[in-house]
Image 1 (tube, rainbow, N blue to C red):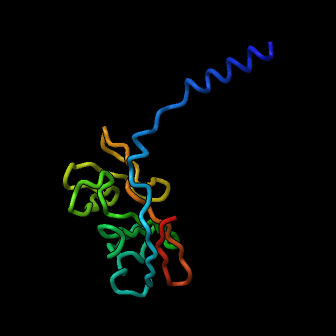
Image 2: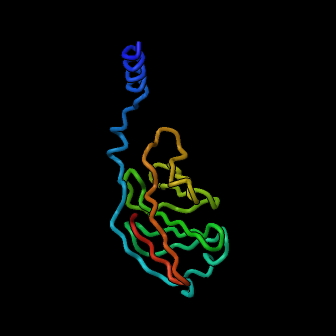
Image 3: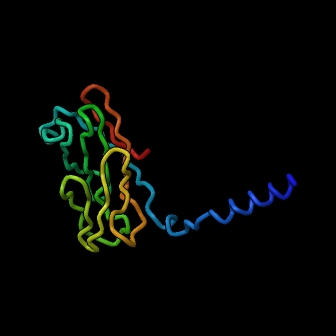
Length: 141
């Protein structure tokens, strides 16, 4: 009886596995090591919770967002499908939008650049942000 139960559980586990070959075609991360200081006038808008700044670096630029005054998230403005020469734009304070295919990607803490447009599976590239005093270090994880 135990062998039948084990076999059944194993069989059900394999049925629940989904194919993620499409995710293997996504750009997972890009090499990045960008350091900036919050005293930089370019980051004035990013000093307040919910504020943001657009920085040079990454593939098409970086969107830096202030989560709560002390935590930050950053995303590359490269369209995840990588078929667009134009950087994504930050719209409505909640999404990055690819101008070539009009796909949108959620941004913010815990959102991870998830696609918000039906039919798109690749997320926007998120970078790690470490704060040490007024210095921010933005890197690929």
